[in-house]
Image (tube, rainbow, N blue to C red; front, side, top):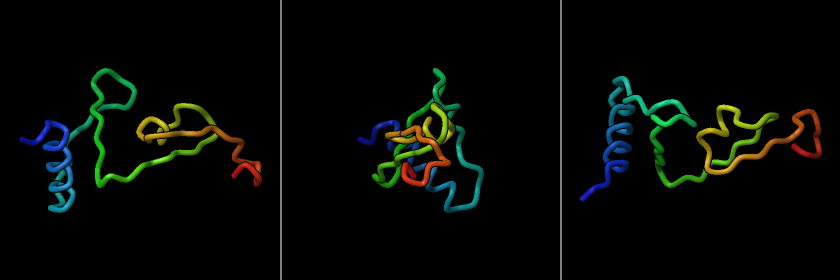
Amino acid sequence: MQSESAKFAAAAVSSLQSGTQPAKIGTPLTPGATRVMLLGVETIAVDRYANAPGHQVAHRSHVIDMTNGVAL
């Protein structure tokens, strides 16, 4: 039996492949958000401030000074 998240992920992939509008998954960091993991890829987001949009959906995140070439 598939879990609800697996069913949702399969439906999202199907809608992307068919060109139809994907299902809504909610706004990150809100009570209505739904966690979705596709393809088993770990995502690491890096930005100049905490809780940037990419940070909200990544598995791990880091905040760095984006003008510092060594840090990048």
